[in-house]
Length: 366
Ligand code: HEM
Image 1 (cartoon, rainbow, N blue to C red):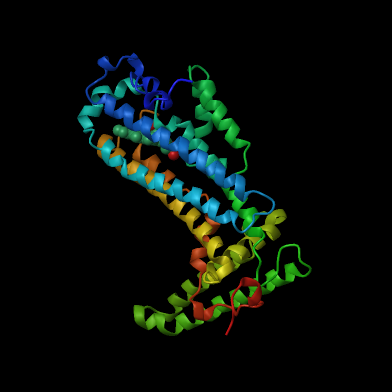
Image 2 (cartoon, rainbow, N blue to C red):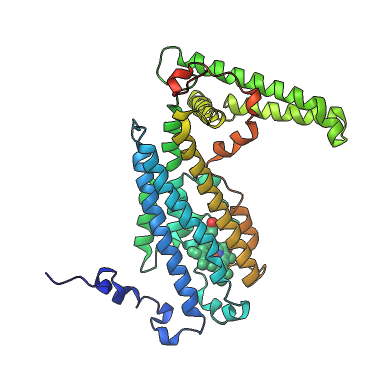
């Protein structure tokens, strides 16, 4: 067997000859075009790794029973995703060394191609659990149909489309997370136990009761501190309570899914509220790492939009969107909506309902 070399293992002869652009010839590129191609290719390589890490995490989290020791493994892979995304946000500094005028030298020839056709970004969104109806769109243009149409007469079209379509058949991180949250023991009661439905309802009712007491306590000092009218403060606190009730009862979920959604939310609320319980240490790190993941994705979208604003101003994109306005719209999208919503409901520790069955949480009560 031949001795391996660094360049053969990493396929460098192929990798380093893939930067010829539309001309298939590096010598004919515009002076700053090599920079433009390399940064995009590097991003796509990072996206490739993100997809691999996400699939590993989903595969383990979506098992019907997730042993406790599996959670650190899932968190480990999500942490790698987060580090990549953090770097990906920073990498826009390198993109920004391209001046607006240098970009104008070759921008026109790229149209109508655009990052809007980054099928790996779409795969990431799909694998995380972004639903078609939740996507930002510009005019009648919808991201996935756009890739379907563009793939029809492009040499790499089948490859792009197969990636997106295959991802649509997979279990998403959101689905795996919800199935796992559903099984969270709540006040010592597990999903499937006799009387679990009542135990969950009791916990949710006691939490809402605690939220009301917290609101009443705030009403006592907030108006004076804010110099606001008592009635206005009460209205705001009541709105908060009404949203809390809707969330806890899963009133916003379709009726057929309401019971499941309620237990998922109760599990999430329990993990977030009693995060110091030893048995919840890894679960809360898992939830934290998914919140962080979405935070970085939103930061990526925001940072990309600022870079675009700096480079092309407010003109339309090569893909035909409104440009910065559309991109800012995408930064408002959230996939893990419950993970964000629950934060509005969390209470100071002194208001939390008392823990029951603490021995089942590995928490020795004095
Ligand atoms: C000078 C540099 C860049 C400019 C001016 C730019 C501009 C734009 C614009 C205007 C859009 C909106 C779609 C359109 O109308 O074309 C877009 C979308 C996008 N770009 Fe960039 N971009 C740049 C660099 C990058 C880089 C380095 C990446 C890394 C992969 C990237 C990834 C994306 C993605 C994924 C989208 C789709 C966003 C979405 O629909 O959620 N772009 N870009």
